[in-house]
Length: 169
Image (cartoon, rainbow, N blue to C red; front, side, top):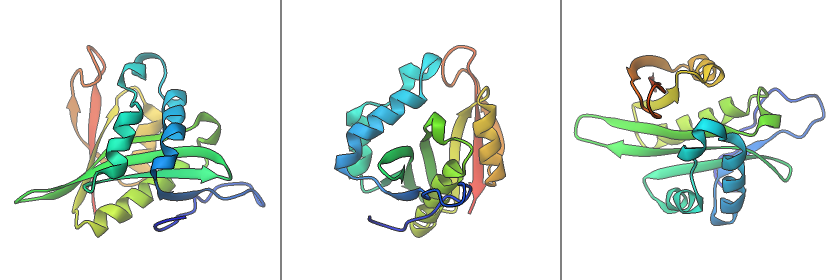
């Protein structure tokens, strides 16, 4: 295992606790499989392919982490860090949790991992966009301290708006 490992907290007693770690090249195929499992239907056109995951694995201004429970990939988080003259902000680009692993603290563990990396990079806030219709994801972000700051009309396509959210670190 590499990097800091953070345990999600809400598994049954005796059940293996998932660990979050920095993704590596050997994770790419599983990341693509996870992406295809999590993003179906209307969001399938926004899915990442292997090349996009590979780009973020090797990009020094980005971090991508995976969460596993045993040999099962439970989720991932990806984001980038922007260092501009007036602000240092992280952008959370994607967070996905496999359907059988949802509502067990994995999303929150992935967010905590990304927040810790953002602080290490000197970021003062994290921004993200989430589809208005994805209520469960929005509730997770709100529970983790993100606040809505704007609506981005047609962000995911005609009539599919996004909420822009921010967390100050």
